[in-house]
Image (cartoon, rainbow, N blue to C red; front, side, top):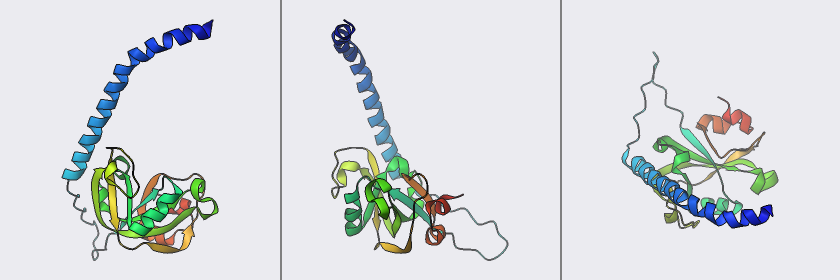
Length: 187
């Protein structure tokens, strides 16, 4: 009897919720367009002056460590010299990122998990996801596409420890000197 009542009222409930879901979807689309426009218009912030009494030290380059949505994405990124990530995750200061490193998850890579590859960023561009044609997806969500110099292989891979990551940032010196993800990401 209860299942009959649920079956009878389910279409009515869905009918009432549909306009609300459409409004939420429209609001998200508008927010995504606004985020993309903001990211494209804002220039990269100027680096803050060093507060030291000695000679100026060069700034340690910022590295974005990004994950992959599939194992096949790795070969496409390596062969085509780029990496992409949702603009919301890359952040409004994505132009400050000078290097990209790839985190290979245990889920897709098993024993080969960790960070093995990194590359210097040539350019970064905000664009709708559907314009990244090497790995097609029909979405208007804003993404940052990093065009990269040749991928470099770390002398020893940085092995995962604990949970994996979606994305993180570190410095180039930390990337080149870490043995595991815990060392890489510690503050």
